[in-house]
Length: 300
Image (tube, rainbow, N blue to C red; front, side):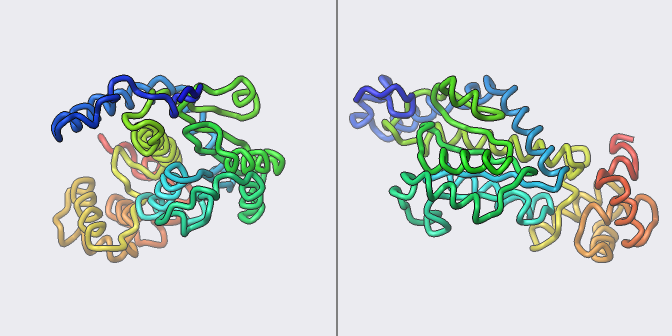
């Protein structure tokens, strides 16, 4: 089973996993999972570069677009889907494209990853342009759909990046604006990249989007103040944040949030400066959405 891709090599530590009891299997998998965060940390500079590219895309009115197949595609779609409820972004701002379309999110369509033409067509379909940053995710580094998508994205003038979990070729590094390669090593179950490679992918995507949202002013201190209340859980979180930041009781926090249309950032400015919702939003817009430019440092 010789294959130069790390994701396809056999892990010598797990070659007798089928002889272990339940606790032995858990301990083995956990020991291998502990290697993931360190591998991601080794790619800190590349991840920071991807974060900057995402921020640049957002500030120019462009998008962060993930492209992948299978587990990689699903993780991209998941990260994109979590941005609107967490940071109040428009749904188009971070997009996830998966080989095989939305049906592939819940039912594997493995053959869909083999067509570079389909990947290129997907970029045309969503209108990729010069303001966008397209990040391909293929932990093996070889998925034709992803390569086809990125080639087309570059031809359309977009910035591109590649996330993989094996050694990148010199050609790959030269072709893209950033290449992120956390080397997590062979999987416990050979080729099962939903395991360590999938965990590494999730960590990287979390860092890119979280960092970009912080840079865009959607976080105040370490609080997600661009939260839009859409359910009881988020209402509770929003009210608790306002209690903490404004020193008010729960009833007053709830009333402020109501007047702000469920937008925590607006309610915070209203409470801090004694403004109505319209003026609070105007000042936030004037400050580029950064709360500290309107109300000062959280620590003070």
